Length: 501
Image (cartoon, rainbow, N blue to C red; front, side, top):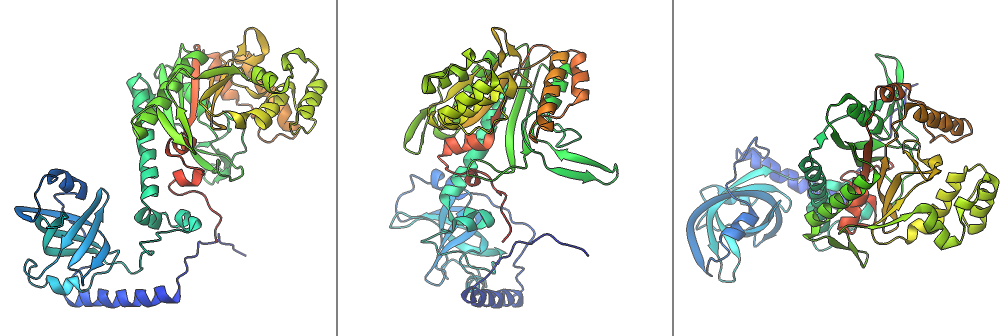
């Protein structure tokens, strides 16, 4: 018996069916006129925004001799097509289609157009008496005859679910969605340019890995038929990037790419997400703090033009230096519990439970600290803050704090109750790293399916020598959420993962 994956279903109403039939009839009429409604190419000479800028000082009721060619989608169609609002990716330009200016045969084509159709227009530029910059159309070229109507222009695509499932309609109808997703591109470019400007080399590492490593997460599993082996979609590129530092490809490397974690879906989690990870030889946690602050500020400036942004009514400042505080100190300030004075794990569990954290009874000392922080404190952090010196139990790739081996030189950056960055003074001692892997495997055997597997080849790489290194990871999706005021990760991912209908 064979099985097939469920397919997305697109439904149409009776009204849409009738409208589609009417458009099909117009398509047939275009064919009868000898018009190819889906041509191969169309050359333009101007954009809507470019024309508005060029002719911003054009006086009222002036017709120029300047002829331009534009293309876009019909968003309004008035007086039987005499006035058309044409939208391209830069904005809107009005088209005036009058018999006095149209070339022979154009009126027949005009009668076959509908809102949503893609057309090209050639004509002269003018300013109307009412001040509207306009193109007097001489020729109209059909570039794509649409068969389905757009949503009502006054209400847009209001169904949130439909916005995610039919992102193309969302982008056509919703200015805010376009602005948010364009901002994402600007943010990624700012991150990349910041790193390139500091001498980092951009690289690519495997997305399918024999051993998933670099994070505490449950991976997706796939199978390679030719090799007849299971592979894991990467949960992080960390261990491969550090191999490149060992090899001396460059003292500074970074990657911006997708990671995959087989976890729940929530307003802050998507199974596939974008991360930036970078590693800098001869640096440490402090160096990564300064780098992170620069990246966050530059990303903010790329969107707002300043180091500040409004998020849900809160004014956030990404101008460094950020506040810095040890995790154990934040816990002590909030709950009164001094975990550094607790050496017995049972006592740590009891203290965490008494404080109100959800404790199963299997946690290690460091996991108790993290649970109290995560359950009681993390959500209260508003302004960008570096939470430092995470417990060693939850930081298998970070160097130990030289003043207390239970802690590490690691920080996470939090803002508006969410983590947006994670960085270490990277562990470079191969024997210590192997011991950490063993500890992780023991946790895995005890039932923690997110604990690290042992990566023997990575340990071998460390035995060839990894210099003192600072590493930093930034969640691009959450960063975009903050910079655009988005409340859910689905708003900042072009095609979020959804359950089929």
